[in-house]
Image (cartoon, rainbow, N blue to C red):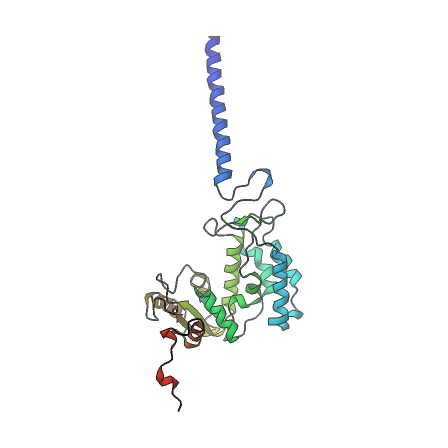
Length: 305
């Protein structure tokens, strides 16, 4: 019987050894292949998107000072760029980037927010370059990126990490990895506030050359800004449906997605107009395509009286 007991003990120990080996292997594989798992030695969490922009502090402070000096000097009396940076930093530093909340950014929004004049708000979706070329050339309208908040953080990336130095410069999570990542939460909150501030006549620039439709419910405009416009403050919404010069005209103002957008806005008691290829914006497109037939003026419009 003693031999039998030894065999049972040996089988038991072998089973435990195999279990421990499998557990160790699983942990190793997870740290290599699973995003967002901490590597050995206190290394930062690993994600699938680009990491925090290098020299982020210098970029943000530089943009803040530049905006106050050149774009909106009147804000300079009440705006402290250093306090804005500190508030922004503490919203994400040393935090798991998948646990970001709107409350994290609330102090930043209060410090960097400022009124948007009535009749000046321009919203856009899939027309980023064109919309901002237009605001820079006309100086009549403002996008979110033309406000202080948007100007400081446009085009940069950031996220925190539980390990030192508290900021992950190697990688940050994509929206598909976690919805509540620092960049997504920031832009959703900033977009919400920008829409809430809009008043008077509001412009929306959409892309009519996209096969999937000019208006998408999943976009920031379609999911956030549309539902935070205030019908008591906004007198009219003008939709400019732009088509790429020489590109496909996938949708017009009578198209399905535009009609869906109109229904959403009409249900919220807005007055809406829609214009295909708003001419002042199209002329800006034609600067890069002067010889294209879409950019040629009709002979009658070139006649002198």
